[in-house]
Image (cartoon, rainbow, N blue to C red; front, side, top):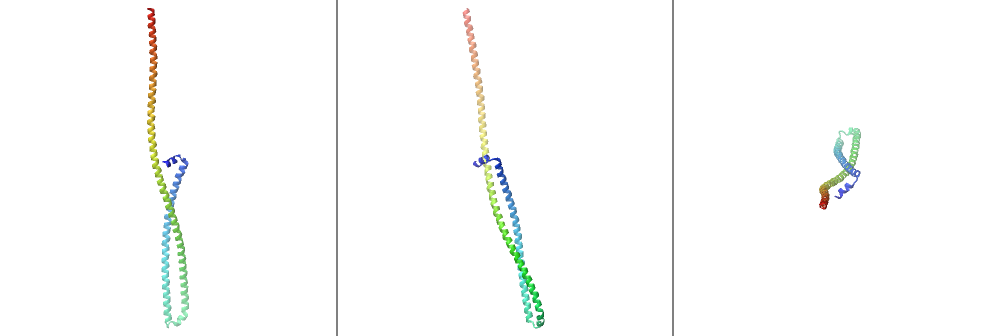
Length: 222
């Protein structure tokens, strides 16, 4: 009731500004919800990209290990083969250079993938932090909205009770006014009746006096 009275006493401009603030808060909540789903989608995309790059890195490491094993096996076979000893003296340096270049390329590619993975991890952490912050903001906005809805429902209930009380009071006052009108009408009627009776009494007294005077004159004449 006190809240309703304070709202009734509140200027319309201030009450309108409060309603506008509630609408803006609700709009902000919807915007936060959209941002939340957008960030969630980006997070899922980055997670999928991270898993894909991680799988590529694993495959690359496996390929590198297989290549190393193959090179080691080929080198062992060449070292153990006396038939290829002469050709190995002239060919192995060139093959080793090609292998070294290939290994360098693999290392560079592996380094690039690791850097990209690190960048994706940092981006993922940043998005997770932003996602948690947005989720906290959404929860806070939702709690504010719930409290506002509860407060508005309470105000509506109090308004209904107050309006009903005012209606009952108006009905009671109307009955009192009707009763007073009847009393005033009766009083005026009684006042009119008393005046009429007084006038009739005075008229009767005059007529009686005139009749007595006439009788007295008649008696004297006789």
